[in-house]
Image 1 (cartoon, rainbow, N blue to C red):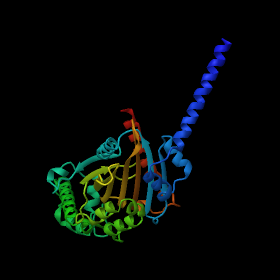
Image 2 (image 1 turned 90 degrees about the vertical axis):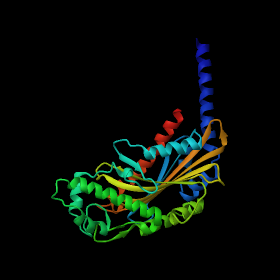
Image 3 (image 1 turned 60 degrees about the vertical axis):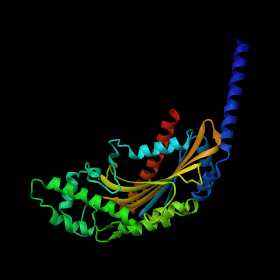
Length: 352
């Protein structure tokens, strides 16, 4: 029995040493050059966080650059799955309606059709806000022209006013998306819900200017997003979708996003997915999320894919207030959302 016990201890010690050595090897293995540049140089992740990524952890880093109305986060994860499957799952997550955060989701046809927005319906609070809308004073972001138009378009004393308001919003969304598909950034809304007008075209240009890594890593994609629809890009697929999201403590947000999925023919190892927010009914002025899905050529069986998610957003929610508490909460929400996204992807894909 004593011999067996010592033999068991020896085997256990050997196994433990093997595990430690293996973990060390994983932590020290070389990153793909693209991932190394993005994480270490562009995003400035410390070495210990990069090593955590190699151990299978989700890593993230927030940035306070870009002014008091902007927040950004970069998050990364290593997944034992092929890049095509990983990118496909990411798109499923974007489209998924969980009934808690994402309440509704729908895609626009090109050109948009009435059926695309048939499920868009306002809350009672939003209808009340529309009824009180005036240029420069509106609880829902619809632009100055919209604020002037809705006063004459809807008879709020009519019993059918709620249905008329919903129909008005659907028509406005269709017209806006159709205009964007035709004219790109020239069609972007100017938010006039407050006394200070906020042109989304200006905010979008600022977001791009504060995203130098995108220009350095994928200049063709940056040109496409800023020059759409006048710029062509081989291997890109476009979609514009609307969704309604509800974050704890905030009003439901009706948003419109242009998503471009690019499989670069010159780089078969990577897929880039860009989400350009072109409308939000509350809180946000605009945003850009870019997800890199890159398969490591060194790992074939099983394949290993790195996912790097970078999100930069602007809005009055992110401005400092209450001693900076509101901004801190917003930054933490952005960080947690990115970490949850990648963590859920890893768990789901590595079960298959």
